[in-house]
Amino acid sequence: MTNVKAEKNSLWEWTKALFIAVGLAFIFRFFLFTPIIVEGESMMPTLESGERMIVSKIGHHDRFDIIVFHATEDKDYIKRVIGLPGDHIEYRSDQLYINGQPHDEPYLNKYKSSLLDGGPLTEDFILEEYTQMSIIPEGYVFVMGDNRRNSTDSRIIGLVPMNKIVGNADITIWPIDDIGFIEKYK
Image (cartoon, rainbow, N blue to C red; front, side):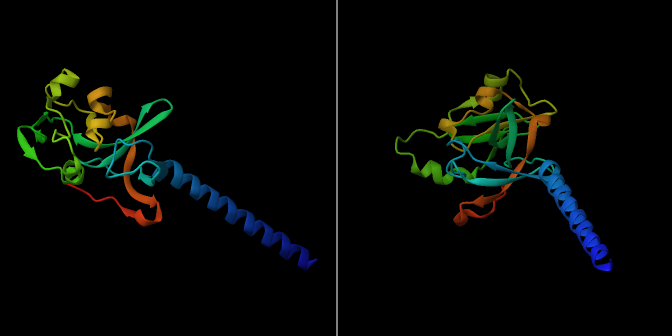
């Protein structure tokens, strides 16, 4: 009799532990972190198609962070935040200007140096050409892919509402050679 009671108690303890583990996994997956797979070439050379990453759903989004957002009902995009609310964005001669001040984009250096045609990586434009606004309004960001010549970003889809942002893509988990945190730029 005692043996049966001990087995039932042990089974109940294992069942509770399993429910707790599943509950914690659910909380982590849906509220804190989510895995993604990079699709396409828009973030090359920073991110390659097929890389697997962890997206943090907590925290805020700074300039030059790589974010994941809902582009359509069934499609998420991964891009870099270039402009924040209140910013005016402009590119001249492959140089980013935010509110009239030049800003370096060191994450583009490798790609710029590999261009064979001598042309710019990012064509000249001002924010108004793509958004009909002089500054980015509250609640929105302007995003671009690092592969400026081959990226569907704010130049095509417009400003991204902050409520559509899933989170920051901070950690690469696959391939094994690339495991680690994405470098932060300010």
